Length: 259
Image 1 (tube, rainbow, N blue to C red):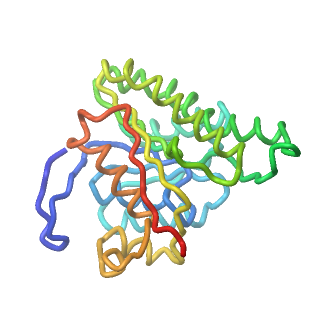
Image 2: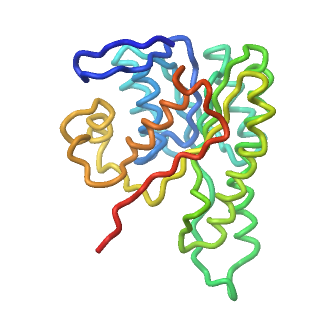
């Protein structure tokens, strides 16, 4: 990675032309897509993972390729072992390595009160939060250790914040703790493990809006609250050379309270 000066943006950007990033859940209207676009902006080759949204995944890939980047869309269910293996096998076949992995999608949204909540659904939420990290970590750490370089970033929830959904909160806390307990061992091998902790981030209305924010056009400077691009910028920083000595961190995002 090298620092360059971008005259259009008027700021320093981290380029990672030799890095390969897997972004799970990168075909929606929110954070995953913005993370994929931003890592591509920084020069990384990007694996755009999706579950059902093939057309939207291809839209991200086509945009990246039109702008002289490299990307591939891979369908895989990252909540199960076979799906994670399928994803990484396909990524390795295309790019021969994976340097960066962003673990984005997780638990469902069940807002039942504690006295009537469904333990079966709650356990599914818990598994969906920690399964991607467990499976992908096992698949990726050997190669990262060999190269003495790697970045694992999880999207989670800050421990002092909570949503109205109990099982969602428990799942996010489990993901955060799983990552926190792994970072020190991985750090000894040159791999950083960090978490980004947003609250209820709104989606972009269109692909063009996501691109405008990624390019730091007018819409970016006029935003009134946390956007998917804010999350993407923090992820890009953690994956950059500037983030080399940051591991075990949780980056929280503050939101304007509704009056």
